[in-house]
Image 1 (cartoon, rainbow, N blue to C red):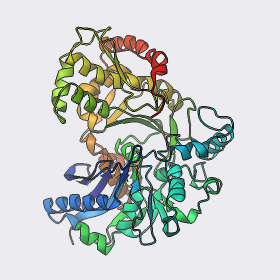
Image 2 (cartoon, rainbow, N blue to C red):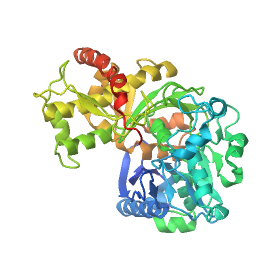
Image 3 (tube, rainbow, N blue to C red):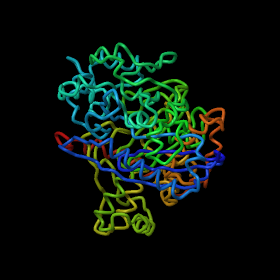
Length: 513
């Protein structure tokens, strides 16, 4: 029998699955990516075919198995990470009865407002209902309809033909776990994000009170377990399709946010990481659940059930870069050309501003209707100045969010570990350090943080590490960017002007989205 010296991690995003094999020291042995479709049947609807996930998973895994000698026999355990907030209704065999309603889907927005509203509303919420959710979950469902609770009710009301056959309602990762192991199970973070979960310390289970509100039996939801718990062994059928060893342990795994937090390798309370991808999120480990009612900063149970993640999400980061690349006439994937354009611009106190609210915003202002803009453009403003402003605007927007975030996390000025595809840009990493006035540290292969976090849960399950804090040894720090005093002073002056823009232009918002 081959020595089991590898861990296998999967990361299911919105457009593709990444899969990677890791050695004990965190080095990537091999990696592959396979895309799948995003289905947009109507305005506000966003679906994916679960069979597409499985087909992509099989193709990517086979590519690794073909590239690495005896890979299937060398894998000690398997871990999964995935996008969160989806709903897949399945029958008793685990077969999907409907396409997945993924996190982008807002068809149930009216239902979300109905579930959370009342005769009197404060910021869109009925005070009594909001108080109940805050007490039980430490937060509340979004009014956008992006959360699982309103999607479940939509299926109840609009697909009565399917409802009698629904055995379980699963998130993305949990559907895949069922196909790998035959077990219906979810992690604490995914359960929390349904807003049907009692997140209070000592509880951490489905809430009878919240389930009763929507008439849903707990039996239609999966079991809840820790991220490093073994969901089961890889079934014979799944092993044959993937080219792996039957019985290989598969962990419960995590959602994408917790996977990034795990892979950041700084498990101490208050430790910060910033994920910089299509969107961005800022997260910190905290012992007690906290929430800022004035913004969308809130807490999510950590994937192993131990503590919480304080999270602030901004809608557009890399998405702003892609949008500006098209606007300024660059090729679709010419990120190097766009960065070179921005690097050629020397920043000044009176240069253009960019506000990255292209699809609304959650933090620092919770406003789905606000829209982005360039401001302070002059006849002298060229493509380089506009490209620079886009990078800077995302960073200034984050600084604004951190004013609230630091108060809740209690870690003002702490070093920020940078993850995600955007972290490959040393230009942007240095800009974040200068704008935020704090050190920023990158890691090797930051765009594989999801697969690494998943693999670290597998390392614990395989007995390589006693716990996730010990598995942090797999994280490989790369470089520290210290703030430049002169640039930091320039950005501090521009930040004061940046925050004054929103109150002046919110009256120009579209009437609906």
